[in-house]
Image (cartoon, rainbow, N blue to C red; front, side):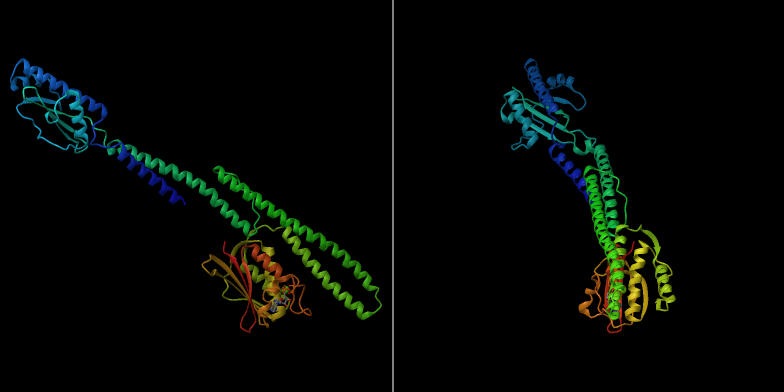
Length: 438
Ligand SMILES: Nc1ncnc2c1ncn2[C@@H]1O[C@H](COP(=O)(O)OP(=O)(O)OP(=O)(O)O)[C@@H](O)[C@H]1O
Ligand SMILES: [Mg+2]
């Protein structure tokens, strides 16, 4: 955008110069003040020559008298013939002078001849020759150096580069300053999109940028408040449910039928787990964790070691990088990845974990790709979306509360990433988490 604006400014400067060249800067036109002067001078010299010839006939004597008027660039003589060839259609400036001279002297059109030669170079003067017939048939031949309007390049030799440079420099500084504020806002918007906690932005730059920043901040605060309210609501409900479950448990103890009592107690344990998980999820969202630089490869190694200690077959691929520094909320991400690994060992007997830098599909940016494979039966394609729904379980007899994948996806998405499940052609399930590379 900066480059485009500079280009527009530059274009405007050039357009202005071209316009002034057309309107003002014509070196082939005599300056109005000088025009009046050369006409008056020519008419005076013509009158003087006429008077001199009347007093003392003879071109030579008249020329001698008129020579007294010579000045550098100005010259007048009387001769039997005109210095200028007769001419008919006169071009612009010459026609103007011709008409003015006729009006001032009352001479016939063919008794006045004008030749104007514009200055050729920077250092040359324009030249004007005027011939006017005298009463006795002699001609007054004069040469003058009128002042022309400045050729545009003469007056702009200094001002053109100076104004161009100044306008471009000031324009660049202004555009750069404005865009810097917008770029900063875009970076913060991206971080907010990833669920990071960010401090309110300082208001700087022009009014429009300040307004944009202020409304962005207001939106961010409203969003945070909304999430907090929701989480608080879930928290309150689940908290009350916990109390009710505890009461029910006590009452279940009083049931005489042993089978019914056991069944009721099992259901209550399930309910308790559900409530605990929901409470944890709600509190996670309400008290958003701070974003810190974390080694993701190390984090995955930790999870594998933990599961190994529990007797599970969980391993990180040997090809995984030794360390993968990443800015994230480590506790949330750890819980999400642990959920995926636990699923792999619970439903697919073992977990193989991979982590690599990759490119997102469809021309996206750089991503971190975390893959968790298992050896289980996979998930029927029709259920691949459903398993992300809260409390959804394929088999009610096994498994936990059905919140693991919901929490995992919500956490990965809060980091600006995505979580997907794929069947590996009958040889197990693959969970793929893509996180935007920071
Ligand atoms: N790797 C897998 N292979 C086969 N089925 C799976 C796998 N992972 C999840 N599932 C199915 O998806 C369901 C939902 O998984 P999710 O992790 O959300 O809940 P859960 O494991 O049942 O309980 P929680 O994780 O909350 O303790 C599981 O109950 C299971 O039926
Ligand atoms: Mg699970």
